[in-house]
Length: 115
Length: 115
Image (cartoon, rainbow over all chains, first blue to last red; front, side, top):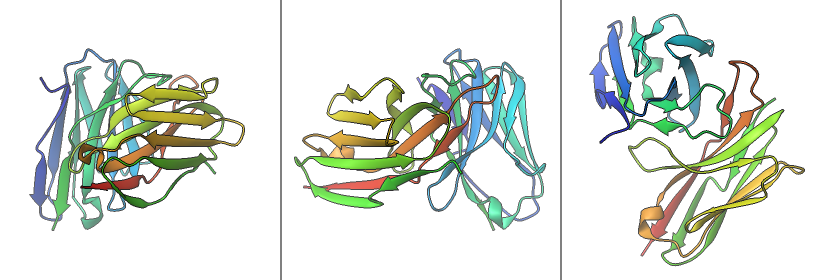
C-alpha cells in the first residue's frame, strides 16, 4: 500500500493552462507538504499544512494554491502555468508539524512539463 | 545565510567498495540533520535523522556521522551494492519555533555503483 500517493505522475500542458496535482497520505499524519525539485535536483519547500491549516508558505507565487479538504489530502492547483513551472513536485507528510526528529515520507513525485 | 553543501557532486565506484559522502552546513539554529536517498524517478526516502547530541547513527550498511562543532556530516556506505545507485541528499532542520520549522536541502551527491 502506497503511503503517500500523488497523481498524476506525469503532466504535460501548455502555457496559460490551469492544472491540479492531487496528494493523499494514508499514514494518519497531521502535516503535509509540497516541495518543488528543479532541474538541478534542488528540493525547496513550497507549502506546509497542519491539520488542514496553512503553516508555511515560502513566497510561492499566488498562482499556486494548495487546498486541504481534510488532513489526509493536500492538493496543489496551479493557475496560468508558465514555462518556469516545469519541475518535479513532491508531496510529503510527517507525523506533526514541528518536524523535530520525525521522518518525512515523500510521494513519488509529479513531473510537470509546461510547453 | 543558511546553506547545505555536499561533496562530491557525483561519484562512481565499483560494487563492493566503500564510499563516504560529505555534507557541510551553515544552518542555524540547528535542530537535526537527515540523510535521504532518492532513486531516479522516485521520492526521497529517509535513511537517518541525527540530533545535536548524536555523533553517529547506523542504518544497515549506511553510517552517518555528525560533528556539530564543525557543522559537518558524512554518510559512509559499506560494501556497496548496485541498488545503492541513487542521489543522496543531506537535509538540515533549523530550530523549530511554533509552526516555523524549516528544512534546508543540499543539492545531493549522485552515486553510481558499477559491477
